[in-house]
Image (cartoon, rainbow, N blue to C red; front, side, top):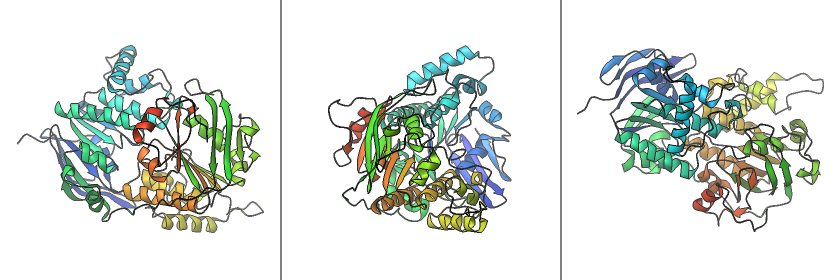
Length: 504
């Protein structure tokens, strides 16, 4: 037997309100693609941060290539040959892509050399990245590409990937898997965290399952089914969604000839976008990140009020110039793709975060009834099975998936007339994904009009009644879910759709 690339023995990490890792042991061999599987909050990301040196364990030991190591920070991890792509990105907004990548590389390289390396690597792996763009102009999907390229440029011995495909197209995922298999064949070990069970079964040769901070078993995922992996992870199979056919009602949202010049030089102009969303239907918009989704969502939420009044209509009323508060008053609720910073204030408690979009607890005199807020937050936590330390728990203390459940739950609980959701289950485990998708379908069945913008095609096919694709600021005609195929939608993501056909 070869010396293991990585050995973790009895790793324990405690926080004031939770034991994130409880006596965790793990072995990864050279050239092995090893999945770590578990629910949101199971302790996977904390364990990866221990390996990468960004979290110090309270107990336990780490061996790398057979040698005991004490990894005090990510710089030491990279020096050993460990690279990590985080689910929540570690990029400086005010720096360019090239400058961000340069920070993690050998300082003997010039910025110009790094820029050339990024361009070459992006071309090699089919990851579209412009090295000169400031990070604050990038979408979530584009930031993820930067993180992946930054990790690959370090030529790692151990590559840690935390939800790397959550905002990639099927074609991009296939290309990434080719890259990962090539890296593994060259001896690079890969630790792979994903909630997409079919990916784990296709790519990984070993799997460690965690629940509640503890290791509950190891298996070869190639010999498992999605159902058996779900049972190992959550103790049960996720509930099957019931997507009943329903005749849509009146038009709630009408977008007509929406044309806007980009405000950001790296954004996309919106070019004559027209579509409708009716009560009692879910309309999905697919597309590669950075093709105008951000601009479209800003125009729909009211954050961008430059549209002509009639370009965006609710219940036949022109609302193009209305701000977010006015649109909420008309029944529009919105879930942005950025959980922390836009969806929630990191330092505030969950109850206080309700005030971002809910005014139920504000009396006529302007006083806030904190008791009402806490009761509302507690009800959302219970209804959506959010793992949190209660209504006063800070938003940043929740795992990404649990915070997503709370934010989606907050907007669904408001009984909206129109719900617009961006990336509803990004980085969310299979059980929570089924719960969020089920809640969206229940809202649709109750007569709400729902617009879902997602790069997760499986999700869109599961919950949408009709699909559009956005590419380079243009919107495809709609296609009924029953007639759509993954291949067709994948081609449309490149802007390849027939010009004939009506926008619906």
